[in-house]
Length: 135
Image 1 (cartoon, one colour):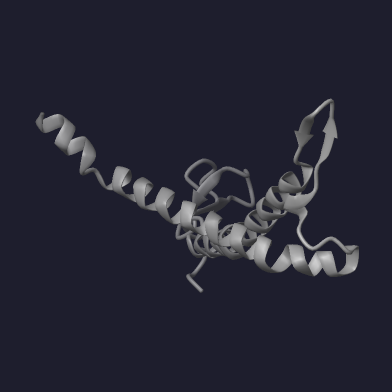
Image 2: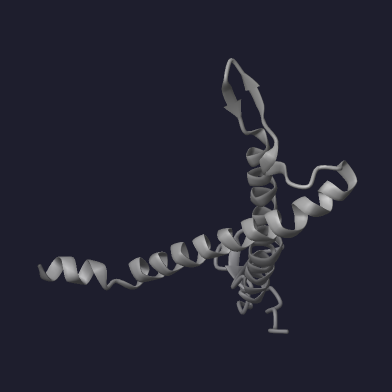
């Protein structure tokens, strides 16, 4: 029973649960925004007030392609928002961290082996090299 309690209280599991809850609420928000604002805006130009009312029938079977259009628009909006407001900023931030973590080695100009930036002599060919100073 202690192992199960430990599993439930792990940081990763709690973070995942919070992410799922926030993601669900965010998806509902985007869906409401799509159905409340985006679809009517598109409807102004297309003459269709709501896509969810669109359907066609074959032998009494009703195909609700309008609901699919609403869901597709919601998906595209959600994907765009997540990409531009989460993925891109995190990628730029990670890029900055990678640049900040400068390499500690460099190439020897004589034998092309990796040496420490602070070295004044190559350990492989024993040639004298100028140490690089921190910027």
